[in-house]
Length: 387
Ligand code: GLY
Image 1 (cartoon, rainbow, N blue to C red):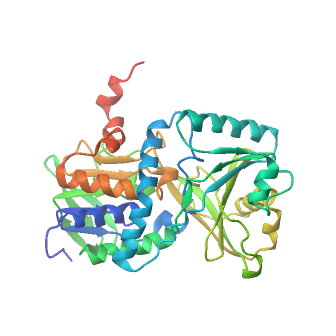
Image 2: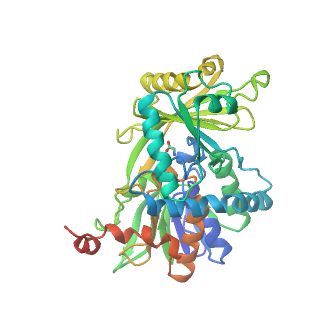
């Protein structure tokens, strides 16, 4: 079936990035449609929802840090706006984060991270092992120190996805609950998509398919985003009321080179993540993945083994060549990207919605989003780089 009215914007992919783009575009008066067999699904159903601009800082990613911080600052208002519009709570919790060290090597690594945070003007405080345990009494006695980042909060990505779907419905976004099979290109312009059950034309098309974004047929090879799936296995446990509060804030560490984090929700859910595996499209939950997460989490918080394990799940992060998102117009007129958010999709949701709505409405990305243009990977941009 074809859409009764040609939308101004067709968003391919109804994960949280596609939904926020559609919501914000519709708020600007653009007739908007989303194509996805299951809007609100995808990586948000797996992600823990850490808003970790400070504790996930990496060398060489200072430009991304600016975007991460801009988005983190918008979260309180963004969450409140969604709740006001939909009546749905998104689980935004200003809990802070504690990154801890289990041994001398970890401590050296965390000290380096602390120095980088300070150089970058970020707020974090070095704590002794004893001070960490005073904040979080369930931590293992052997903790060697930690970094307290009171600005790294959390949101519940499943609730966020539900609220964004409802917000889209409120502002008149049309949902095509099916797969997009091919981008339609006429002459040198993207003009819509062939869906599994019909076609739809659109003034502009946004490809927001998460890790699947590089697979849409019909997209010219030089425009197809170089996103790849990076598997993350995540566990959910339940903290019985008699054990609450089990943890007061997100606790994380790097154990034997692997990230592990424990994110406590107000409703008693405790999310433990995440593996990072380059295994293509595989989303199998493996005994090894669950074992490693529980082993590492147990080293941080021994009492975790007493909690009921309620869910195991794997999702796919959309990894990009420089770990940063691809936002805005491509070299193919009419086709824009909102993908490649890798480890920061939940954090970057507010700023992505704002940036995409602005570029869809005006043709111009806001300043903060310009470094993330997909054109940075184009042939011309690569030729300009120094050898
Ligand atoms: N940002 C957490 C993760 O991707 O595992």
